[in-house]
Length: 279
Ligand code: GLU
Image (cartoon, rainbow, N blue to C red; front, side, top):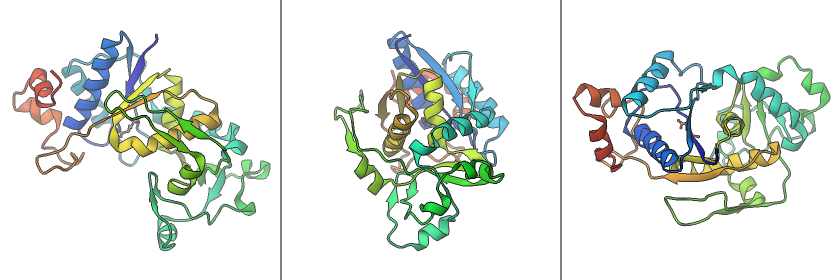
């Protein structure tokens, strides 16, 4: 299979028009390329992920006419794997345990905002917390926050093969360090989205990631993680976001534009396509 893409929803609320757009667009492109379309349930945040939202996702996608590969990945079932893969490359990642709270970081006024929240000021990045054989035996390791500080001397070219926007993108690793910094890979018992997403894209053989442009900066994190893990970088295509009438992004909390609501109002999947300009 030369073209594989995926839709990776988090089951933390109802699917709305924005999700439907992303899923239908990726599905349509996979069909046009005679490719495969995978589904991945990103249910790492166990405090917010709910089984009823997951079931609703399957129902909504089927109703929209989307057919996915039958091997659905559920991230909550793959935690051990993420942890093991991360530890295998502990040195290359430059892993260190971070004891800072969000407010500790926020209180350091010079910390600018990056794609992963505040750019980490480096407080715990010293000998004491650096990853060591000793640290691997630490029973609290799984419940810690673990950040990466890889040493790469590299420029990343053309990771955006964007079919929606013409520009190709490049960034150097030193720019990455300044604007994004030491990203959290493991957060108290759970893999961070960035780590899990990269490992799963590789596992599912994804050749083309089609997702919203809100993840544009996050893609740089994914490219760096792929580099450390020796995984291939897929082509990334970021599509426009669906906005409400006031020009705001659709919120998951709001039921108003949920697919379920449209269905209840008598809309057909063709109406949804028309609404989203996908005809
Ligand atoms: N679970 C993420 C979300 O719903 C997926 C992002 C991605 O496509 O990588 O925003």
